Image (cartoon, rainbow, N blue to C red; front, top):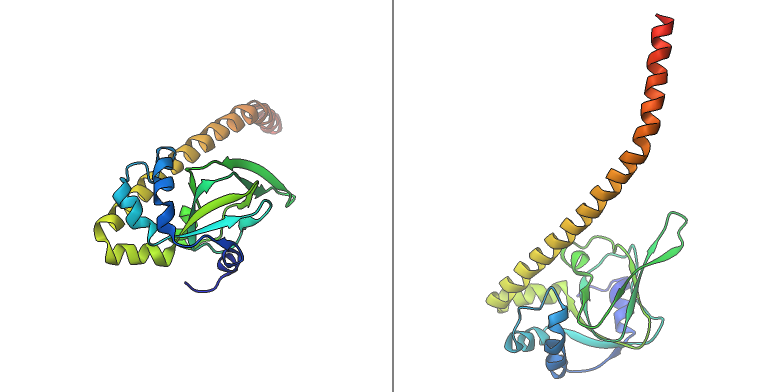
Length: 197
């Protein structure tokens, strides 16, 4: 994996050694994971061979908003807070990630800047899957690779639908609020034009 600001942060975390030893714990949490909930223990063990497991201390920034992303994270233990900068560049807490949940999938796939920052709220154990490792899985373990890609597509599609629904609801509220004001202004303009004609 090419050295990036994100990768440099990961390298500063405590490596916990052979990821295979955590396969059972990961499998025990997959009921909470939209991405891995259909994976059996054999598949999780195989996937674990391509992951790295780290310990992050409280307050450590795992992902930084705006950085180019090249990995996703599965939270095994602890709690991670997600912050998004508002229009005044002040961090706002927008989500809390619990064990069994994953994050960072979108940037791992497309390499685009991270949407938000993810910070360990307490001591955390994380399993990391990089873009390079995903590419290796696709080449070396084609069945597992195809399943991961399909689950990623389904999960990201679901998130997009949820985001679209929230956006439409917000737009409807804005339209309802501004509609009355716009209507009054429009009527006034029309009356003015008639008077001038």
